[in-house]
Length: 345
Image 1 (tube, one colour):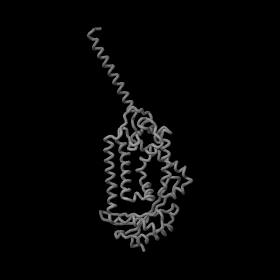
Image 2 (cartoon, rainbow, N blue to C red):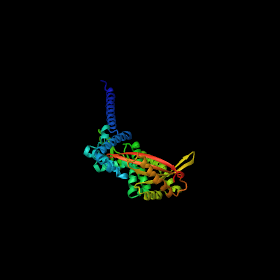
Image 3 (cartoon, rainbow, N blue to C red):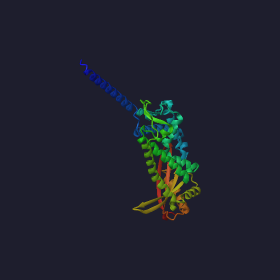
Image 4 (cartoon, rainbow, N blue to C red):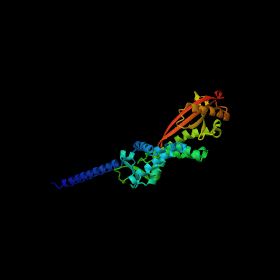
């Protein structure tokens, strides 16, 4: 072979070898990307929905003999079902069961710490609490209001709404825009949801620019919507006496857990009705008893009319709420019956 051709051939061989190494490296990197593809918000949500269905079934089976007792808890009736959900995730998502709830088993992913180790039951409960708190705001708020009254105060209500807003915005929007699809609950507890084939060879990000900006925007939108309503109601002089009225109705009617609220109706910008809504909890068996509800209404209508001091009110609406539990699963009914003040004697 010509000695002048030797360097050229060697150079070509080196290039070919280098190219094959580059190709091999690219294939390894692509394999790692596929292997460490983080589950998105949609899959996580569907998995969580599957878990909630399973939790509901467990709650029905376990608490069925105690259905009447749970119904007697009124505002606190949500707690047994929530307790089932907490125990479910504390066992299945912790290192006790390899970090997989049954919903996660369906989609073949798991939750662990960012270093690859399994999480403890306490951390699992913490994640569950932060994920579910925004969706449990009404029952938890009612429980707080009926015990310590914190949600009836401006400060307590504002702080509570702020916490709910931060969690709802952070948990959802962070997952949409975070590189590893981590929600705020994951960042707080240093966890990450990963596929079963995951290898901890990638740097896990905490709070990055996109999810942070999206979370702030989401919080601002929630603040504009709910904050505006909150300020509007709080600064409206027509609504200022509703808490006092509610207390008076409950005291004089001797009906526990009764409450009152104002509701206005408008058409083409003109107010057509200003109603006092009296929310009356009754037993599930009495809900379809027309004689019972009519007798109760006839007792409450004149009482509410007598106690009302708001001159803009023209209607009183009785809203009957009935709820029973099948295990820890609530089944509710609601009916309303408005009556003009001029019709009440």
